[in-house]
Image (cartoon, rainbow, N blue to C red; front, top):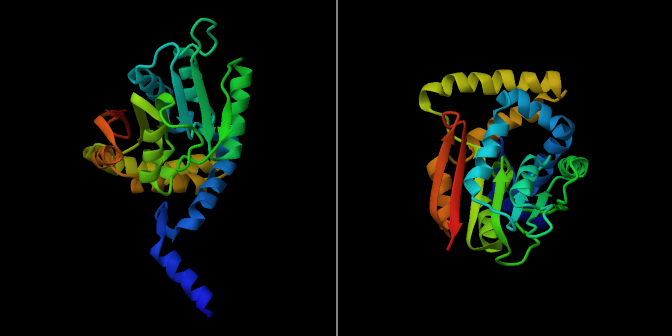
Length: 261
């Protein structure tokens, strides 16, 4: 093995991350996560409805209500995928209003997911621009948005602390960050939840999306994501204040909220 190859191997060993339960080089994660979402994009909404029995729509409406946005506000939807939240926020901030129009920008790192979201915005007649970008390096100016939300996307990011810092940077003083994400379930339900996650979920993926492996990754990525208190501390460490969270569906999902001061 050459010195260059040895150096590369050493760097990969030192800079590893998780992809589900597997340990991989950081440089590989974006590609692997991308492959998952390219595969599931066309069936993403259908699978969400089946996996959550439609509850994901209630969770998203709750997030918009908790956000406190008003007409004229600017909202950034990170990892917004098929655009459920962007549609809700567009109505909440009056993006179609002539007097005090708000602004919602739908972003995702995955082009297949973003294409689904773009088409849905057009079909709904909403003025919501879409942009492909990396949450760890947001192409927006400092202190631009009143609200930033990331729903079911933070767990897929390689450097969560860097992404949180970027979200803090683009928020105005007094702006809010909302993180809606799978979390740690109430302990008495953990065994039943494991059976569902590692048996039924991949089976639904196989039958409905023709892709069991991506939904096996989903189950594993949830278990590797920080729990409620750990994520709360990460947000505080990234400069957010008054950080708190709401457990939804017995902690299967948690909504974290923090302010930029």
